Amino acid sequence: MQRGHRQDLMVLAHVAAPPGAEARGIARAVGTPERVVARNLSRLTENGLVALVDDEHPALRCYRLTS
Picture 1: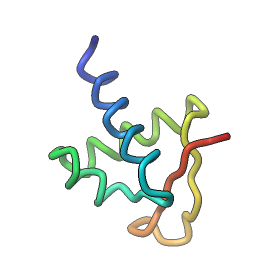
Picture 2: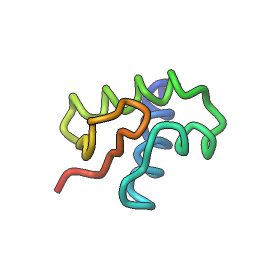
Picture 3: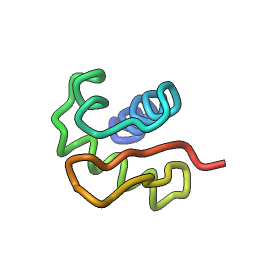
């Protein structure tokens, strides 16, 4: 499995665990820089797997799984 896809799966698992996951917390949990997690979240959002919940403040953006 390609590294980017493996990283996407780890990020996806963290979005699924607590509702309202944010990039900073996911980055800490998976041990990856926040900018990398942001790219993963962007890709997962574009693919329809993750939805952006709150985007009023970029630092407080929360993500959840789509239904």
